[in-house]
Image (tube, rainbow, N blue to C red; front, side):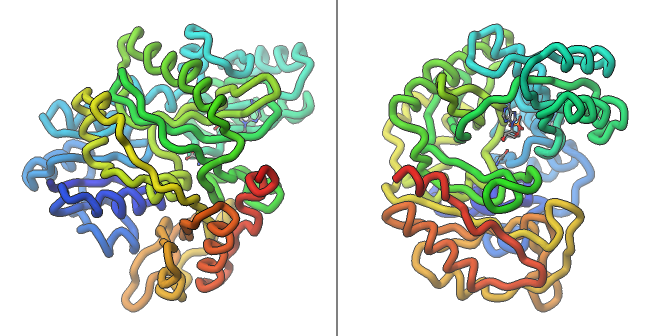
Length: 424
Ligand code: AMP
Ligand code: GLY
């Protein structure tokens, strides 16, 4: 098979790395890619839009296109490819609303009794502020649309929540994504990421994982796309796993089908494990980043037949999916300044040394190749990932990899996995 992967982050490097291990695959292409992906896949010539990319895929006899990020999915890339008779993995535009509109997701949850925080949606700032004054609890104020993980603002006091409403609805900090806001009660607990593959009917869960969204140690600083991840997440017990499948995953997939939006692809459920059980914080319509960096190295089975089965509606024939028993940890190395404006163009050294450690993989995110060197080109630069017999050793090994790598201004969290370590 010839496979095209769309995206340029650590998630896509991991996808390309895993897909390359499939005996079914002859050649992998990627766009826009990064310096790590370039070592495995060929770059696609520049295309201006989905139609041009579909032209290229058609003329290059691409058998399967795997879409990494949410933006092209929400903008309908799978619709464009499917209309052309091309096979593409991921939800169509309508189904991608599960991530693309927080209000859509909340309505779906309400209609299907899926546990989540109480909420209201507003497009009028005065009405939103009046509501905030009536609720007697801390809230989270969220831009309805896609905002690269940045459109969620805590409102722990009435003033903070009011300011958040103004930032989103009046100052338009997130543009059109802030046409409306979802205001929901704060949930207290520990977060976990629950990832499933679905063909719109049958669902196969991945092993559990947890990411670290805050930029600095002890979960302080700013919200980011994720500064590290580990798998398994001990907070997700077998009982909770079954509960999430029955009370969240299947009601979501069935609920989407019922409203004429069958969801095929990766369903990522962001959960808060509260004292009264797991509640949904968000849905994503694609693999998590950096969760993918710890999930795919643990997947023993070939990913390609699983993807094809999601598209064909035959996922129920793949109940024999196998996992490595080892644990995995990914530590993200970020550019100086991130998550605020950050530096780029810094030379990265030590990559080979890090990768020479057994079971350590360095997945590239914001990197590019200049004339002589691999240099930084984004906020999150690398995801140093280790597999080991237990989580503690995987964490140690990942940090051993990190200490081999250098670039000016590099920063990373030193406490990835601390919650898991306190449970085992
Ligand atoms: P979201 O993109 O909606 O998942 O929000 C991003 C992050 O904000 C989550 O991973 C949580 O850390 C936090 N968050 C969002 N909503 C809530 C909530 N209702 N209660 C507590 N934390 C929340
Ligand atoms: N790591 C969180 C996400 O991918 O949205």
